[in-house]
Length: 404
Image (tube, rainbow, N blue to C red; front, side, top):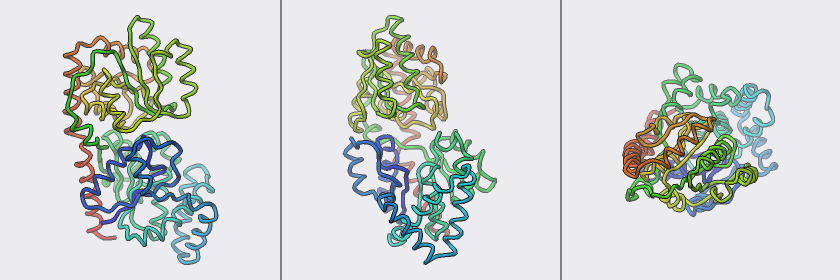
């Protein structure tokens, strides 16, 4: 069975879970065509991501002329279907507050994909994220393309669901996926009675390279690693303030930050202002193997997010038997239990975050080891990428067997 994967930007360092899901489907015998709406706006460090980029078609590579030509071609060859798709685009635009031009662009993007998806013989389209990729998948089906489904991850879908037409997408999708129970509950709030029955939890899987890695005790050195985009919702500014409190309390520690983004310059300046330039290292993006080594070299991973679904990096750290200090947002409490596999702290609370860091610094080696083993056992039970991809593949095959 051939399926099409559609993502806003793919591949990306922060989207490695999608790459693993695709690999899991291919291991189950699926043929997967990769589509990205736009080209990735960051360097690809991981060799696996660079290989994925070679296999990924980019919708907007068609250019303005190609988009207009595709839209006109669909209108001439399939006038009724194009009219229906236009109606759907305008309804989504109305929900978004009148963004008609943007949704006309989504329709043109669907028109670019339609002939290629048909020629490939794709039986289903699955979009990741409930934003523009899900809109394009919906419009592609309206034009006569395959049925679609989508995975909603967190803040992009739940912060302003009306503006992305989440209810309309849930009503039209053959099914929708959440990556945790928190996400399923959020989707259910916006789904009608029928759509609510089509919700599925497929957890983001952890790569075999993390699950099978020999477990070791956390090091004695007070080193923390943080892996996240340097963007406002990830809470790095609060982490700097908390780190400053820990330093003022007389603790010796080091932080290594993996990731990049629009806040890097401001965060580097703030670190210097707080006297943390020698303690906080900005490393940029790293490959999966390098991330693993950084996590293994840390006493704990820290993630101070202000909003999340269920961050994969928490799973990766726990799989490597490293406890975590994380804020209680989204589905994080489904993974992290204070005193069991880490420290769960209130978001936007610098004192609480500092207390979590201090607790990790003071923790006895045997307590760190116990927490690490508890976390690794939980991840092995719930977040095996192969098992989760198999569950999703079973849903794809069931839909294909049921027919239109």
